Amino acid sequence: MTQAKIIDGTLFSAGLRDTITERVHHIRETHHLVPGLAVVLVGEDPASQVYVRNKNKRAAECGMASFEHVLPADTPEAQVLTLIEGLNDDPDVHGILVQLPLPRHIDSQKVIEAIRPDKDVDGFHPWNVGKLASGGVGMIPCTPLGSLMMLKDHLGDLAGARAIVVGRSNIVGKPMAHLLLRESCTVTIAHSQTRDLAGEVARADIVVAAVGKAEMIRGAWIKPGATVIDVGINRIALPDGKTRLVGDVAFAEAVTVAGAITPVPGGVGPMTIACLLRNTLTACARLHRLDIPEAEGRFV
Ligand code: GUN
Image 1 (cartoon, rainbow, N blue to C red):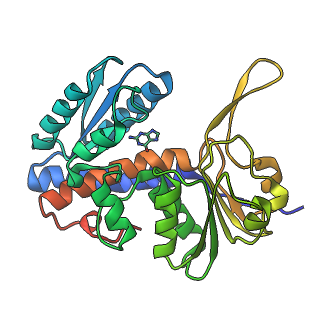
Image 2: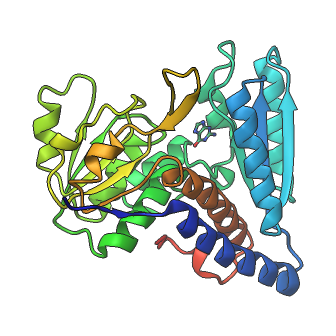
Image 3: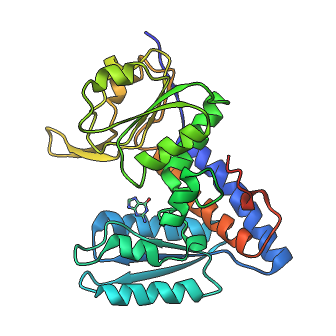
């Protein structure tokens, strides 16, 4: 039985963070500037609290300033918008991230559109969405960016490859499809209405799974030798009452068929935060016209 290469996102992200740390120290010493990331959390969702804590910890580790704004769940929308206006104007803040999902009484799209596009390190503002779709230079969403970095590191040139993105969210599926198209892949976007999902997956040299359904993509669907990027993070209950994190791909099956696969945890997850830091560095460098590679439109 063959065994796929495991694409180690923990290792890859550590290397990326080392490069970012070097760059941040260079900027601090040469330009007397400290790249700064502001993270806004509204409410007490435990998973979001963990993510926000990790983001701040990682930002501090690589020498960036991090500004945490935690607001109660019943904060009025207008107050969130006022906070964002202040961050837009704050010269110490180069990147702004509002943790999603927001409480239901707040219009997420309105909040996203209030963020200055050049500080939108999530790449969710319509200006950045449009830049990605039209081949321009903007901010690229972190999870798709991290996924593409791992794909290119493993495969090199992606031109001509058949790629399938399973899931059509604004956060992952759609930007991932645009990135793969930009790399000259032949791209299929599959979703809940796709008729023959197994058949579509079976044709793909690259599978990006971002549906949010535990182990939905089976090993038997995967083309032998394909590269599989599993974006899903699902907590499942085990018979003994404990829980376990699994991806959107049935890993134990897929690992015997694929050429390479990302594990969950330890695959895409750590790359997302590393790319958030990279986008913050990019935002700082562009704003101050610093001559570092991260300021360019080239991203991998
Ligand atoms: N919630 C889950 N993923 C993300 C993300 O990439 N960015 C933000 N802001 N919130 C999220």
